[in-house]
Image: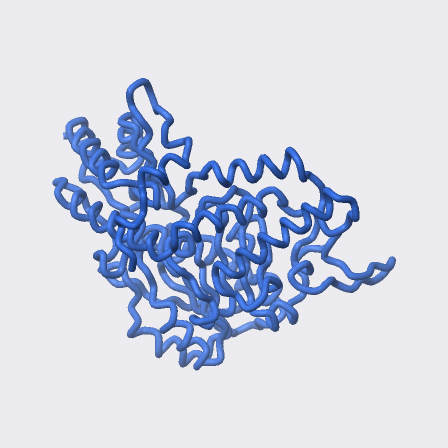
Length: 412
């Protein structure tokens, strides 16, 4: 990977106006909550402003100048996203409201069309609720069976359980590429290969990984990938579903209405081709264009350099946090981890820790992070999570640690 010094952090930070915010007079923001949502560079903000100021029109329908320009920019962004993850075709990219909707789309279209009572879907014990609840809903409706790759005490997947699970002949294996709680980077290629050997499709939740690690869906042979715009410097309210073209073509539509149809009569309809079959109604045009600008920004810096920077920050954070007496860090060591550090502090509730850190300008997240089962696995109701991205520095991690000592003083 590229070394961190290849990134001009000072220049990068200058692109993010929010990093100059003072939480209170004299206390500057230290934003360590990118796992929840990333901040946005001026390049993304200004690109969306440009659309609203000079290009605002609906897409695909109009023949006037603004409509044609908006359509070109919207579909151009689709092409950028496809290239970013090395999809074979732009039509393999479907825009949704968020990654959660993308999982639901697969569950309620592919799942309903292909899963029957007794069929097995394999997940993991470290899944975000977004890649758990939709399958539980389908299990309640169809009687499908859910099985799970266990998580070890070290916070990695117990891959010794995989062969036995594949003997159940699952129809789908759906798993996170990076845990939003543990920071664990899962062995995508190994799981996908095992799934395909068992005759199953493989779906990857890339909400945490795509913003931080180079992603190549063709090299990994992923069947479905979901991720979110807002975690990769783009706007909120926008998610992405990648699906192999043949799979998307065979799936029924998710929602009905305008733009997803080819022809409508009073008693029947036919759908448009992919990806439009899954994009009913007026989409998030400005947001898609903003995501295109975010992809341009990430490409300019380079995902290899970003991955190296995140890894170096995470390693430093683990070292510094381990210095603080009473801190318990969840998840594996740096060899299997990146981009976050979730922890508890003895004698203090995670929510109290986060609140006091906030008084020192340090923005973290406290709670179960929409991943209750993995917290239950480690017998804690909640953790405090510091998560890092390309604009963070080691000095900010030092500020986090100094503030934690202040927390200890209060709760001693």
